[in-house]
Image (cartoon, rainbow, N blue to C red; front, side, top):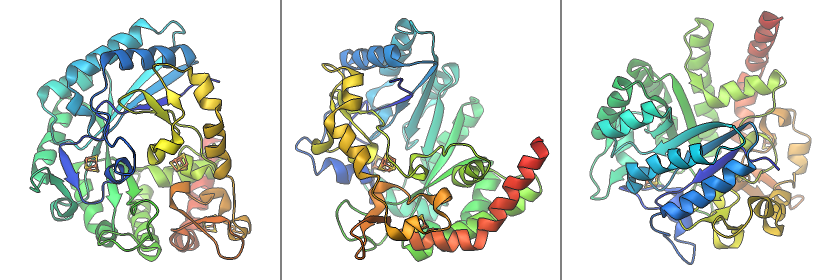
Length: 374
Ligand code: SF4
Ligand code: SF4
Ligand code: SF4
């Protein structure tokens, strides 16, 4: 079984920030060992070696956290060295790194540029919204420092995406945020639903996003995007591009649009493996990169059950005209239905509102692109 992506946590859940809604802090607090500390070079070597031998054609090493830059730049230099050393299958290697942007400096920027890293930087819209939930360890504001560091990424020609967590507050002010991103020249954007704490009733936190607000957010963002799309000046917004891609017949790029989970091979700092970033929990541990074969971890009973559990589909979804585009969203957000005991995305009503208002226009865009490519 070829391996495409491996998600690595060099500093476990450790972070130099303290965001109010951090899903990974919530997850790590539910494990026997909350933090596995810093990944050793030996573990890094073992997992890169195994991943390179398992890969065919291409592989992506995606570094995440917590905050991965806490592990220090020399660790990443080692990663590049191991990727080169163990590339016996001559596969194409990509590196991505998801950061809060707080600790970036010229040395990091130079390194990212020289080694063609694609960086994801988390920013929540405007200064006011960002600083409401994204604090440093002392509770201080972070927007100003991160904004400066993104300018540095620009100066060094580093490729990056902006990742924005959609809270109740970002959803309400998406027009303002969209204009701000345009002024900043942030052409690659990804909007991620803010998760409520695991196994708790959704919608109870101050930052909680409701299905209604999410639907309105999607419609407003889509209309802004579409207006620019007609002028050939739209930014890349991953979710909309994916919808158009599906309508053009391409397989869904995001796992939440596939209707079924896949095993994503997350590596915690001690080398233990998990099927998805949202399930780095003791009961989902698949094995350890230091001692087990990747092929065995991918096909073990826990992995099989993880995928199988995501296949349950509610009657509402089965009869839904938007199923091809939505496919019941991410399993982490699904709740049990009263009628049939099956699972449906908590944000269903938001999606339906969006598709009702913008689905036809999505189809038009796909049709236009199909004709143009003929
Ligand atoms: S920067 Fe990311 S990992 Fe760190 S506290 Fe915030 S959400 Fe969590
Ligand atoms: S839980 Fe969500 S993110 Fe994880 S594999 Fe399933 S669909 Fe993807
Ligand atoms: S819109 Fe709702 S009913 Fe339709 S596929 Fe998505 S979650 Fe299911």
